[in-house]
Length: 174
Length: 124
Image (tube, rainbow over all chains, first blue to last red; front, side, top):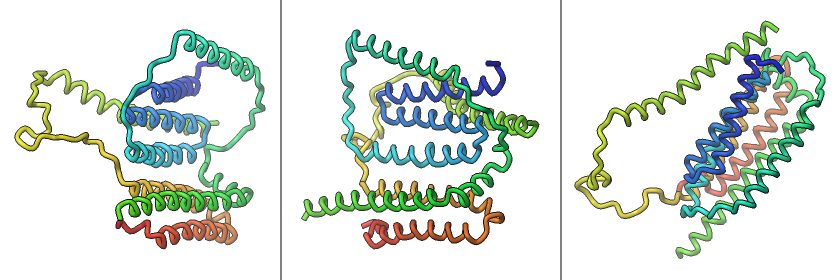
């Protein structure tokens, strides 16, 4: 494990991602939580850049830290939130949690450390978007068409849910 | 290998730009806090000094219609993302990919027509 620039970048990005995730759970204000989430999304995009997946990184920033965050903000503003903080758990429970996390960390470290993935020489950083296009629209066209069905189902489902809400409201008013 | 190195070095500029973008508001707000005088008074915390007293929480519940617009935005955003690699690789893909993409766009157009018929796009 050499300390190259790539390694340093990976460590920094993963630290930001993990800290963002922890802050997302621990912060009390919802808007602060969303900002922590954005930091996590952006550092995941940085990890994609390190893996030479340039297009995926751009999509990550465009969709996740742009659109999904806006959706979450709308969701927060739509719901009624009375800020009440629950009391924290006892000492024993915290100790058990720390032991569980440490156990999980050790187990996955032991599992991953000696894992040998054969490295292939790839050319992903050259014309990344074109390569994705070639692969997606020749070899993987069935999943692509299924994606359109999935998006259609999401759109219609959202409309049905929200319209039912509206009709109920109108019924209450009249 | 040279190309990979130059690819990664290009992203250093992006990284510097990102750091500047994050640091600029933080530094500006912090310096403002250092420089300005701090003399809090009761009257300074009111919204309008000589107007109607605010009586309600400023954060209100939004109408659910905003959410549908946001959701439709996300869905058509995803559609655009799929269009992009298709457009880049179009000269090598040919007519078959065009038909595929037409099916994809028609699928989403069905959703849009459904939303139109259900009068989601109209505000009232």
